[in-house]
Amino acid sequence: MSETQKLLLEKAQSGDIAAFEELVQTSQRKIYNLCYSMMGNAQDAEDMAQEAIIKSWRALKGFRGTSQFSTWLYRIAVNTCRDKLRSYKASFVSIEEMKDFGMDLSSDEQPFAERTASIDEINEIINQLPPDMKTILVLRDIEDFSYEQIAGILKCSLGTVRSRLHRARNKFAEIYKNAELAQGAARHNGVRRMSR
Amino acid sequence: MTCKQCKLNISAMLDGCLDQEVCRQVEAHLESCDACREYYEALFAMRGSLAGRNDRPLPEGFEAKLHLALEREAAQPRKWKFTQHMPIMAAAAASVLLIAGAISFSRGIGMKTAKNTEGSAPREQEFSVASDARSAEESAKDYAANSETEAPMEGIMAVPEMAADKLAAKQESLYVHNSYQVGVTTGDSEELILSINSLSLQNSGVINENAGSPEGNSITLDMPAGNYESFIQELSVQYALDYIHTETQDLSDEIYSLQLQEIYLRTAISDLLAAENRTAEEEGELEALREELSVTTARLDELYLLSSSVQVRIIINNAE
Image (cartoon, rainbow over all chains, first blue to last red; front, side, top):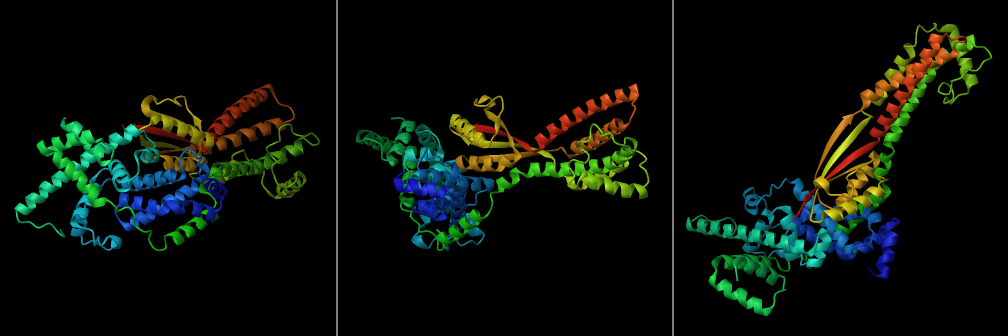
């Protein structure tokens, strides 16, 4: 942590909002993107990102500097999203089901208007993963955190990161394969998948 | 190369940490193994599709909303700081009622005895008038005025019943003891224990006998009720909590009946102490009442302590 950051942290810990805002400014976009990848939509992502930053403000006095400040923030964001996902009681709704209910998924995706059917499919599979597997996959494969950073965020060893990531990727590949098979069977039966 | 080794290597390949020689071996395996090729295609499809999807701009107004939320937070007193004092406030409120009941009752008894013991100060009066905001002199005047019009008390039941009504009205659900069971999944239970030790020390918690040991994969902590919220908040910052189960034990009935008993005992003792010439039988009764009072107040203290504290049992689920 640089001297400037240390100074900002001290000020923030004594209740200076401006110092805190300056401190989180470099991380908030990353936090939002992380929440987006975890939650799968813009509204939840914004809510979770705001909640995570507020939580970190409340807990700021307890930050002892044993990890990078940004790592600490990401950990709070990940835990906030995981708690939220768990509160959904693992009842993940697939993109297909959401579309069946008439939800327009493209509305909050303007920066990525060029998204393809393939991305839909990948997102759908990631959303089907249990929260812990989803977390590690998002951190590594979408948010591109290093193993060391992930170990810091999840408070586990590098070995645990590797094994969890491997399990999550296995699960992803298994679902992907089944989805491909299902898609192939649907095509074979002349059934068109929606919006593909 | 086995399929298991190949998959592990594909994973490492995705992370860019596989040397060229092993890469060639993986490629050779993929040419001959459909299952591993499907695995490879799935993961590379994911990486290819999602690459660059982590640079979304912040939603419009994000920072302004955050600023407002932070200002609201800063303006609000921390909840736990407030609730920390609630049990004390509750106990204080009950004590005031208790004393008020005792005072109003002892006035009746005290006045009666004042007539009988002119000039000699009662030996045990600390609970009667000392806590009243008004002076003893004013109270005596009040009594003198009231004693002319009020009927003499028939027994010691009347005033405690009044106090009982007040207590019942005020005390409803004030005295409870909460026990929480919190599930935490972690890959490093030792670190979790260290974190909890540190959090609980900050929260003046007392770790029970299995502290610092993952025996039974759980840790039990006792802490002031007001500290629970901040403890859980700090814990949830460090770890995702799987669940929180709450069990509430209502202590109000027992506390309420003991408070009444305390009033009866104190007034009975006061009455006996006020008598000029006590018989041996009365002396024995006085001794028994004092003993009973000491047991009652000790149990009340125990219950007050229990109602102002919570027990938190953390169940550690190993993520490995």
